[in-house]
Image (cartoon, rainbow, N blue to C red; front, top):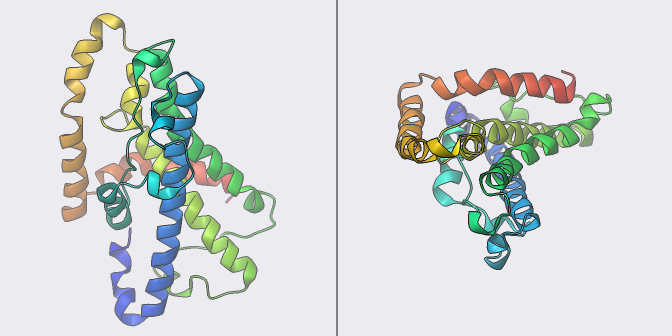
Length: 233
């Protein structure tokens, strides 16, 4: 995420610092909402595992994964610490597992739409965080500062939500899809998903190193469409 802004570090260190603080805040908010929602839905469906392990909490430190946070901070794609789920404690097995998996991404999307209400109603005007704008983050008036914060929190919630709906392990989309796989094919599906983590990391690293933009090419149009739907811009 910050790769395109490293020039700002030399040109305007204070601008780079302000942007960094905002990105950290937005990331922490998005990941916390995401993982807490997994734990909340799992608990409501009968699985108390996450609650016993202290994951039914809005304390960010319960949910942050160092590797996932660094990846998202640097490259724009990442993850939080997975919430443990025991399917044997869920009354409807795969169906409830899919609901728990869907809770994280959907909570991010819902939270983003709620935060976008001031933009949708015209109470705030969203600012651009393009490279020609980053040096001026949090340098305007109060309403501009609030808009700066909301824009990044909305963006990262939409990004995290859409990214995690990709049907590739260990992302939530793979478990959501598993809820619709016929029982006779669950073993084959599980074997297929074992290659998911390696494939996902490979794609992220190739995008990171070579700038192919494969992941953003897939989820970017969805994020942009949702941003327009949420904010009206």
